[in-house]
Image (cartoon, rainbow, N blue to C red):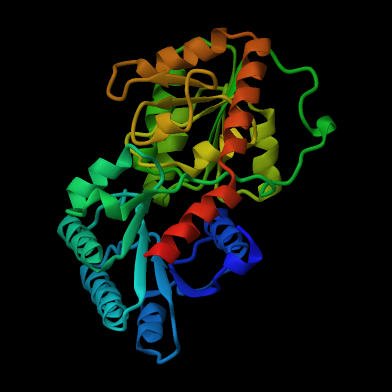
Length: 349
């Protein structure tokens, strides 16, 4: 896109996140002449909607008013919807990236569904992270497919610090070394992974790295890992350097989701050049194939265990080749090209 065709747009992103995804998303769109400010709380979003300052567009990401307290969740919902109404009345274009059709922790399901339906009434357009999501989102949100656009999840190139060769095992220990990383929540399937791994007499190790959701989840993970010296737990927040070392040291990354639409953890594993084990759910098969993944069917009894055994049976040459294929797939998820497509939708909307 030539400089003379770049139109500067003043936009508002809601909400922000510690996830590097939103930073990479903003930076790549900045190269297309789209500059965003950020509102990370419903009250800030509402104040911006009431402000007389000019605004060309709003882009929504995670929109569910998550709260264990119903009244607080309802208040967040009302502030958010009033803000959207004011933006809409002002003629501001509203876009929404549908990361999930519903939140993973569904405290108030009817409120989440109502919120989704109302957001869909205000939007100019919707983005999804895979072509196969378009008919599903169209049907669920009662939107014409012409208003739903595919923008793949970009890679995490340059996000993680490099790891010196001397920091990684030059002579690997016997067996295969599996890694799960990410938030430890029920829908992530970590307890299933621990149970099925413990039942298989494989040499090597399984590392669980991530922050559990609450004390009960932490206790459940610790209990499931107890007595198995092959299982290593790193429960809690990890600095990027520590996580980079764990990923580099692993042979295979395991992502045993019960349900998922898209996965930043998958894209991170691909970016780091690691083969993956994962179920055929959501949009995951649009990002990987058997050239870099060991698939199993969700709900299949011992399906995860079988995938672990297939991966363990591969020699390191095969796993290295799969890692190279994973890195190639990540390279194709180029933020600049993704942002070009998003900006094109903005300017045609």
